Length: 379
Image 1 (cartoon, one colour):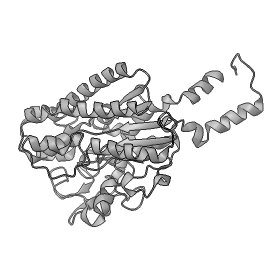
Image 2: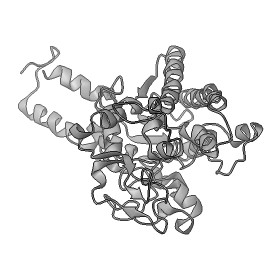
Image 3: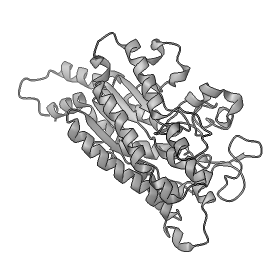
Image 4: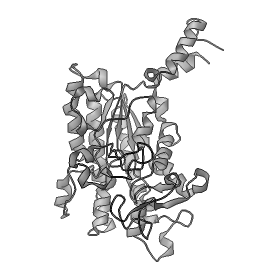
């Protein structure tokens, strides 16, 4: 065993370092996590906004696999943020459920199911009938700005910002879901939204960095061409519309790839503007495509069907939690939980890919400099 040149570590100190590395404080060089986004990362905000009686996500079988009850997560169990909290922090509380700053000692989740990156005024100006809540990214960012002074008495809040991990997304998917599912706009019209969505995400990142954020994770869009709801609504008799290996709809996945391409380019620009910040692109698309390309290797027997729902096509004509819906026997073998959101097993695939790599550079787990320094000294 080699030691740093500046001194020799005693066996006692070495054991102490090992002990530290196995405590939540050392694994979590991040003392807090703050997340923004939509239903893919919401841990209960939408449920607290509207109550159990009005939302299927507040009724069984949501949450049955891990929590044994509905928690407001759009899944049978945990979502991505729950796995990224492998830094040994508690599950993130939804912001709207908090009673005071003491509830956010380890961070807060501002994500809301159905949220968009763009404000509702953007869609109204495009002639769309806005039927969803206006908990957009700018609203979530304002919630964070309201909370920050309550968590820190420092004028610049650097003590919190320096040691917090910020998850900015996934956000933007609903900016396309809402118009696509309405059936009132062409693909080209929805495609024209993408640069505006990217700019809204970039603006939020810029604001967070101005406030002092040092490490930000920015996920891209999912392969929506493999999502049961999209497969059902846009099913085609044209064989060429489908990828022969995955049976996903090609043009929808190409749309997601276009969003991700513009996002990656914008993040490159932001890194040049903010060289002191670490901005990580989380490639959910790449991580999840493994499920659809190699389902057997990952234990997914039914990657394209919804586990919870009912009837053809793709088992999503009756929404999960509504009367008449049924639940599959083994959710871990399905990628989709309710036709639009993922199962816990699929969320774990996405989280593992960005937490440990190779679907984030650097991998989130590699951003803890204190751990990296100790590993360098004890080689």
